[in-house]
Structures are given as C-alpha cells and as structure tokens.
Length: 314
Image (cartoon, rainbow, N blue to C red; front, top):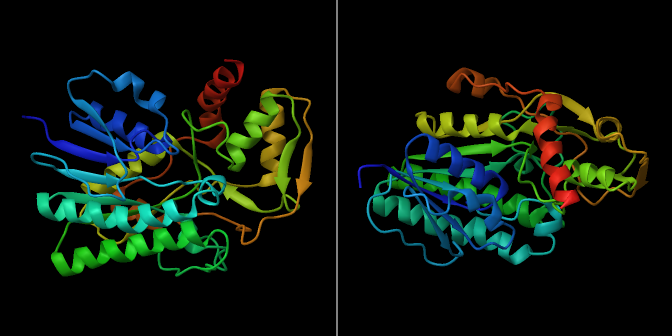
C-alpha cells in the first residue's frame, strides 16, 4: 500500500468522522474504529466503499489489532457528553484507561505517532480564568462528572508515561466546547439541546441562572488545530478552542433569534460540579502551531443549524 495509514478510534462519532474526512482529503488510508455506543454509522456512510477507507466495529477497551504499517493513531473513542458518561460511567472509565493503554501498545508496536483527545474538563470547575495548559485544575474525583474528568486526566498521564519511558511519539490536545454538523440531537450539551428545543418550539432548558459561560469552537477550526498538532514536534498538552466567551443565557437568546422560535428560556437547578466558566488560553497554540480560530460562533452556527433542521424535520 502506497498511502500512509491512520487509525481513528471513535471514527463514527462527531469529531472522529470529521477527522476521517480530513485525512482522506490529505491522501491517507483511513481506518475508523468505533463500537457505535455513541457514534453513528451515518456519519461515515459517505466514506463506505472508498478504496482508502475501512471501518472496524470494535471496542478499543478490548485488544486492538491493525495489520500492516501504521503512521498515526488518533484516539477519540469515548462518551463525551454528561448525559452519556453519567449513563455509562464504567465504559467511560474503561475507554479512557484500557482503551488508551491498548492504543499506546499498538502505537509502540507499529512505531506510530499517537494523538489523544483530552478535554477542557481536566480543568474541572476552574478557579483560573482563562485556562492555561499549566493550570492543574479543580476536579472532584468522586463527583458525578469524575468518571469523565479523571478518565481523561489518567489518559494524559499514561500517554506521557509512554512518551518519557518508551520514547513514543505522542501528542495531547485539550478540546474545548466544539460544535458543527453531525452532533447528536440528544447529545445533552447546551448547543444541540438549545437548537433542538428551539426548532421543535419547546422552551430552552438552562441550568442555574444562566450566568455560566462557554466558548464554542466550530468543528473545522478544531480539526485544523488537531492536524497541526499531530504534525508538530510538541508532546505536551495544547488547548484548542475559541476564546469568544458567552453566557448560557445570552446563547439561548441567540439561538431563539436565529431560529425564529417563540421559545422562552426556563431555568433548572445547576448539576453538581458543572463548570461556572470555560474559556481557553490559546497562546501556546498560536505560538507553536500558528493556529487560531477562523470561524466566529455566528458563522459556524449557519451550517450547524441547517444540519439540525434536516434532522428535526426528517
């Protein structure tokens, strides 16, 4: 095979499927691996049958094998929204621990470079704002969100251990709130929830008083940042996100306006350990990757809304 091969775990998920597209377009042979617990085969339907793509229905928490040479592994398998990892706490911990261990073992065996999808959740409910990579975080390990937060923190530690002890080429991306086409309607996170509710004419459900903040990154910007980080020579964690911060209340009002909905915002109790503010410091990404977002939230919402409209109406 003349094309270099890349394995993308979680390849049928929201982010994984967009990464599959990017690497196909870059001329790679792509293997997508997913157990379809939260992924959707429809996200990669358009790639099926292509000579440079294959799909493996497999749980990476179990032994992972790929035949032949392998250039890169991108480990994106994991439930990623509170509604998912609160429903599947054990699977979330296993994919972050055993799944990462299996992928690192494969990378070591193949001499492949491995990039892991970490998250802004490693900062927990942050006491530092905006969040820099040097901040160690404020995480409750036994709280309801701990299964995801600690799985990702362990994943980072294990990856760095393989890098320092085995000399494995590794990269760590800390992903902040990302949105775009292929998100699930029932994802549970604020953006798909608000858009779905507005399109259905339902009231928008906000938690707390709506003063908590989020910073939303359009998926194409995230994929570009990930690709640059993979190709870089920097092994430490790097934040990839958008610094355009907005309160949940303001965001709900924005969604009501762009959808033309008659919905109103209703408020419920804030879930335990829900972050009050979230905004990345992307100085490092600018410096070492020459990366920063190119899409505003408003620009990214246009194709995202079109996608959700088709889903809601179908």
